[in-house]
Length: 327
Ligand SMILES: [Zn+2]
Image (cartoon, rainbow, N blue to C red):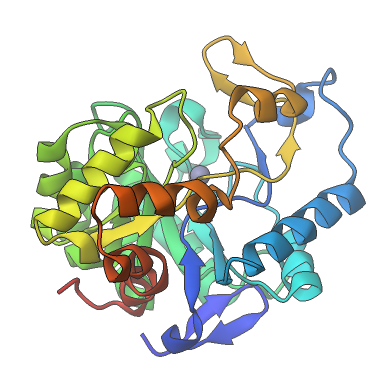
């Protein structure tokens, strides 16, 4: 792919530089508008917080911030563009929708698959709404343990749009399951495995699952570093080191799935409703700079060579976004 859409224009793959593949400037779960008990949202404060975060990332050499917020999770591409302009960070957004259990599903449940594919294509080619801001890639998502009919339809639509527009895809998985199903469903639409980054694959401590994904040729996201309520980082580091030792390091991309601003109160699981201010206490390492401050040293301790560590943020994301296979 010669040029990649960002929220402020296009760039070449060579310009991407150090890239975090899965972070969020803002997230709101469907229905966030109904939570009148949530702290009030101020756009100027949200923007200032995001710009400050971008500056901290820039001090660690990050040049590109991929925010794969699906359409139904509070996606706000104008905020992304404002933050990109004010901070100098390159920001990339996506089209696509979330998984059935947590998404906003009524319209897409009823639209035909080819209408959904055409909607994704429109957001990539013409832009999102009237903003003129174009999505750089497609987000897909599946729930835990099985792909629902709704999710399968959206994956098929995503595959068709990805082929027509020649863009890559990034995924959400639940509980470290269904990554291989995602690869297969896209393959049936003509999408080669290496166009997909299977996200949240660090949600399970299962080396065989990780090898199945890279064995098919897909890129693999260890992209929830710092979310230690799901799994301790030491488990993630062990599994990353093992993939590198077995020669699969060029498939791995690292990120945190951090959220800079919340619309409504985060619902982190059944009955787990938190004030955004409490998240820093519950998950002190869940920040977008955690990788550089605490995870890179752990990877060195685990014996991962320096060039393999930097490849996971500096080269692998660009190779995936360019559309090339992992060597
Ligand atoms: Zn995410």
